[in-house]
Image (cartoon, rainbow, N blue to C red; front, side, top):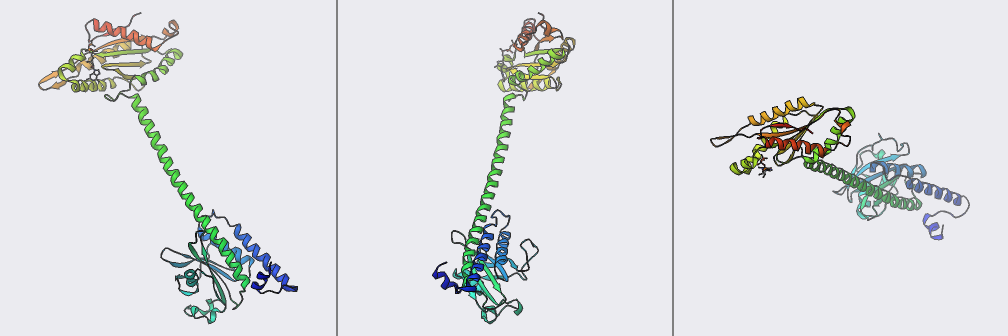
Length: 394
Ligand SMILES: Nc1nc2c(ncn2[C@@H]2O[C@H](COP(=O)(O)OP(=O)(O)OP(=O)(O)O)[C@@H](O)[C@H]2O)c(=O)[nH]1
């Protein structure tokens, strides 16, 4: 405490004056301490201000505090207020009447417009309070302090009043200036915190959207890489991914297993005669017909070009041969129009059946070996005149 401060606050520096000063000082520090304990992470600004006002009332001899926030139109409206009978948790508390002032209007507007502390020692005799309808609600004295953000943007005006005219001293004035300064920093921090939070949640939402998009894209490309674009059937890559499981079941549970390699006969001639696009239509129709011949548990793929492969899981050789014959007939029954001309095709099929004991004979069962056995049967079918099913015999 220096001489200057002693002069400003107008207190005696001796006897009971010193004690009063110490009490005032402790109360002031307590008020500032309570303000420093208000969290800027609170959900709404009004609650922050309310707690700040409560700290002031609890530690100072003031009767009523209020805060007027300025909006974009320059209107000051009271967002919250407390009197010594209120508690900050009392969320039902509302100002007696919603009040607002324009910049420069009344003592609150004057504090906002000038950026300087305004003080009225006796409001009852001050013309600025003449318009207040209920004279009982006019305070004895009032101090209005403008509150700014750290960048000196006006937030609003802090007001404290007391019913007794002339109650406030320079001491109160000094304290309120300090208090308003810290309150401004607190509100600034809260606003920055909120901005940061909303930016984080925006970024998080954006990131989640991107993650979802990426995963959809990944699924799309994964599916693309497993499908033949022309026919929509699974492709060779899918075949090699799935066949392991079918073979494992065959080995472990002794399930029978039939593999068919199918090849359209003289397909080159179809392309040459009717064009590549016509050939594509034939491939699509053949695929559709093949789809109808398999169950969900079977594996059907376009193995390449005009070659298709089916694995009938848990199907014995007799049924495998029956199914192969049916497929051959279904494909033969298809027809396409090319102008007046009706076009039809045939298919050759090589079948390799693995009976339940096969894996005991061939413990190192390899899918490529199985395919080449079916391929050998297919070549036999081609050699024997096409439009046939041949079964591989070792
Ligand atoms: N339109 C079309 N043709 C294809 C496609 N993929 C392969 N081909 C054609 O299929 C034909 C296959 O001909 P080849 O391997 O000589 O066999 P093929 O004429 O069917 O004779 P065989 O198999 O001996 O009965 C070739 O002309 C390829 O160009 C495709 O996606 N679309």
